[in-house]
Length: 253
Image 1 (cartoon, rainbow, N blue to C red):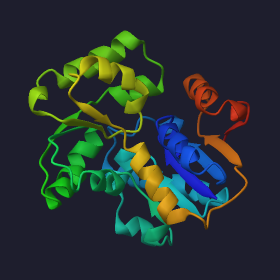
Image 2: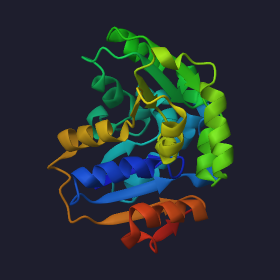
Image 3: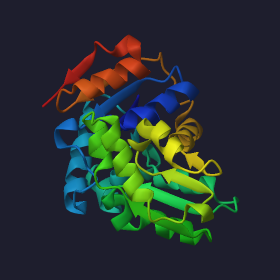
């Protein structure tokens, strides 16, 4: 069984991409809504929350894991693998698959992410290692706004303010390096110039999941949703993406 975790509903965009590629895999999803959003938390806080999330997924039967949260992926350390007795090959994070997409592309990049992801420098360093320069901009309020169902006008203002001082004319690709951000794809598309391509890393991660976890994680398409706090916006998004499972969301301590 594949376990997917995120601070809340953003990881559902990754789960949707995985389901499109692997409809028969068994999946358990954990959304830590009770502690959302993760983007402003310290590395120490993120490490503690990550350990708890992984333990919950393994207790639910997950044998392969996906960190569908860029803030968590940016804070992962070898010590966490040791603490949980995890082999590195059993966990896929967001950063590596995303960066690999651009290895051979001569693109000028703008990275939009949470403060925790930007502060870690993990994307900037990874792109530098493959000879790419990237402009990184933090959107402190966007993940929370999307998680808790803020009005569209508020979401649009957050995005517009964030990109106002960036050099969009010299940008080829905008990378949505928070799994919540694709939930506002239409807003980004409306506010960004038409020549800019918008990259949703969920598809690169889903491809990595297929390559790394299949066929050992072949199953019957069973699905469980676990959350640390009930949330109407989360239920609404599950209904939109996975309507057959909307009535089966489990709230756990």
